[in-house]
Length: 532
Image (cartoon, rainbow, N blue to C red; front, side, top):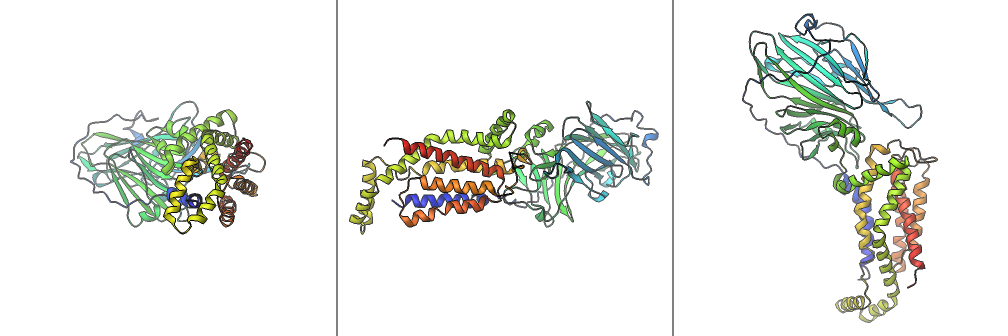
């Protein structure tokens, strides 16, 4: 029984050493190709049509489009973003986020969320099949003469119109002043003398480099939410086997560590195809079969989100975009920890000091358990002489030795596992906070003090990891132990192992561990001063 603490201590090391891959590696999604159900064709009722700027006469000269016309561009700008749009396909060519920089340097350029210098990789392409034939590169006419539009206090509506084979297509974008979301309405009108049938598709295109792989702790690639589960599809697997979803698609898009591009279709019959090609990933939303009679109209509505994975803006975007933030196995613990951390930040204005305060609160909650743990270890240490005699007396009879040991523990009211179990209970909290500090955009480029200017990046001078290793060594030396000298020396290797592990960890996580060590040393000092 005297080896129980040694075994549990080793288990702790193994848990902390291998827990990352055990809990945080993005789960490999089983590639499934759903069978698309055959939809009975029916004539849809005429839906509400979105407003069109400068399109009060959408049946006159505005609808005369020269498909060979020269490409032109429009820039829509707000305090949050700058969106560049092209008349070829009425697509988006680039999105720049004005609240975020590319690097942490003061003179860094703004962060470009999306960029394409050609039509092939532009996003929000609309296309149609069969009688609703709409080439993705169809030339549109912009119903606004300006080259740049500012989104200030009011919503801005921008419309593009095109026609092909007596089918009129109007793509209307609605931009909002205080949001990373914008809406898209696609209206189709059949101006021919015959009914037309087919399907409409909208493609979200995201540039993808094979070197931009998911890390052990962060998934990068297509994500889809169906109202219950968040599915992740590895881009490298999609070129071999495209993923097909049907029905109940709340939204789908492409997620990186800190940002999300996503589309939420408002048509419940939508089918989703996710594929990858040379340098891109495509989330393609395809409607059910539709039929348009002569002069009949129909429209399709989509909501989008192109911005940071931050609760405030994801919630404002609606459509459950906030489900893109998921901390893995420990999400139920991580979520409230993030809420508390942001609460402290609201008062302090510094995430570094907020981490320190949160660590203090966690330590306070576990103080009684830790107190009991150290007292138990201290009690076991005092019983070592008697236990040594029992081993010498019953060393050859293991069964008898165990019986005597158990009786001895019971008489002295000591639990041999009491010193380790409270520590084990705290491990989930550590991993939960680990996920929060590692993947929250709030810590991206967030300064602390002195040389630590980015809590999401490693300490550039490795000062905090080294100090953390020293405090861990002191903590280890102050902890009561029942081990023999050889086992004790082995356990003293823990600070060395952890120091090397934490060298490249985000400084915010190192700050948490360092603060926790200092508080533990203080608690051990106070326990030592208490009378027996």
